[in-house]
Image (spheres, rainbow, N blue to C red):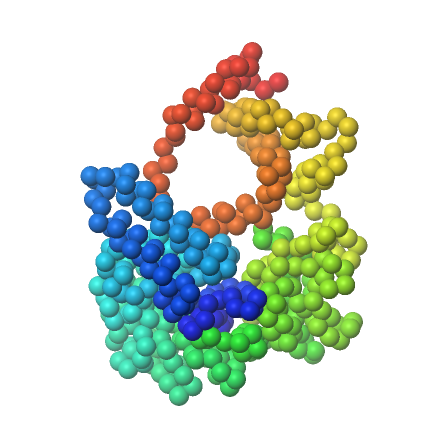
Length: 453
């Protein structure tokens, strides 16, 4: 499937925020004039970190690492306005920067949420000095000349290979890289096209060769070029040519079933909202324009058969967060489980009945803190499956009370977990003595030594 490579412009310009919603994008940080200096400051921070011997000054190296990751997150999320917790962001890095930072720069941006680091595939030293998992490294080639041999040399270090091609040279991809003799390849192929109005059929043909073995990059595409190219890589057996579309939350819960067309895909990418095709109206349907229940579009995915779409969104609404016309979050009545608990707690924040324990917790910081510590202890001491489930439910309840009070949603938590999953730097994970002591002090205040009441 095609994705944008932002070479001559940043991902968001003139409020056009939806292009990265195809699930992946490539950024070239040194190409953006207004952001180049801040990016170079991150590079310098990582080079400084690499010069410190961890055995001699572990704390200073850790301090620089944390500062670098914080700067990288600001660069990705604030300056570029990307959400790396759900979008697979590829960062193009100069080989010399990888070498001079001795792996610190690559790790910094992966820890900040990037999915992969891209660098010159002919610079084997840079690929090696990136010091990140092979699955997170992309070797890029600007020419198809001797491409087969060049990719073989880079393959031990990078699991993905991207190459700049056009309609004239794309046959190299289909004939040489996907020849029968290449069946033993252990890497994915990512042809990068210069986007233009005539690129759609070329992308559609290329996708047939790449199924399961790569993806297609389009350099600085318009929403129209990207959306139509995306649709060209799909298929449908419907007589009206529409694509069945499941709309989901960040946590994967289905909100409803709708339909999309190539034109509605383009419209969704243009505005970064949920836009579909209404069969009853026979026209585009931008969710929320009349009801006020609009959607922020995060990501579009295609299923394994290539004939159905999934829109991952955040449902909004001034009066209620409702996807359904019956004013419920989903078209399958009220949610259950964690989402039902979340809705109940949100309602308690606004209007709690007399005697509400949840309201009492929200108004009493010390009580809520103490209950969190108490229930966590009980969970740690539970010994049977049923007991663990019961204590875990208690911990979730009190944790979600805290979250609701602070305006944190289940989707916010899911985003944080997804962001952490991209990290390559791992902490030792030992317990903190001062936290244990603080917890013991709270539990010792209870007459029964901490047992639940």
